[in-house]
Structures are given as C-alpha cells and as structure tokens.
Amino acid sequence: RLPRQLKHFSVQNEIHIGFHTPSQQNIVEVMTLDRPGLLARIGLLFMQAGIEIHSARITTLGERAEDVFFVTALDGQPLLPEHAESLKEQLSQALDDDFDSLNLNP
View (cartoon, rainbow, N blue to C red):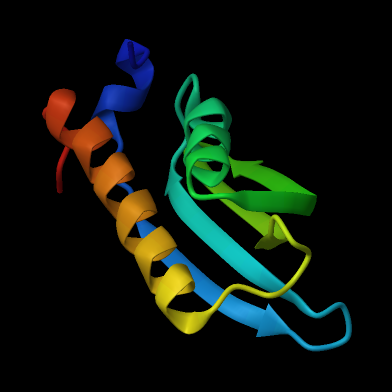
C-alpha cells in the first residue's frame, strides 16, 4: 500500500535506457514516485527479463525516486536493442499498473 502522504503527489514515470561505452553496459534510468516495494518490483522485473545488475545508484528526492542501474544480459553482454526496448515496455507497464491500482495515474 502507498502511504497516504504520498497519494497527494503526482510524478510522471520516466524510463531511459542507454549504453555506457567504457563499461560495455546498459544504463537503465527509472524516475517515478517513490513507494514501498519499488526496488523489489524493479529487481523482480530484471530477474524475469534475464538481466544482471552490476551496480546501481538509488536516489530519493522527496517523493521522487531516481534510480540508475548498470546492467547486462546474463551472459555479460550488452542488451540487444530489442531486449532493451522490451525491458523499457515491461518497466513502464509495471509502474503504470502500480499507479492505476492506486488511482494515481496523472
């Protein structure tokens, strides 16, 4: 459940996936409303998608979560473009579903 204090905030979901050339890893940036279980939800999606997290920077700015993950496929190779696009859609859908279930969709 979302704490009642957070129900008053409206934060648009943003997901960006890029490539970090020096590390040969993909960068997944997730900006959304912070809520209990957010990182567990994202981690579960990564696991289901066959993605390995190498490092992460977790930032919470008030009610807004800005999380950055450096990831690869399980074989250590960067994500293929279609895999990255599929991941972006899955993350977007999961975060939108969270908003819809709480009647928070902006």
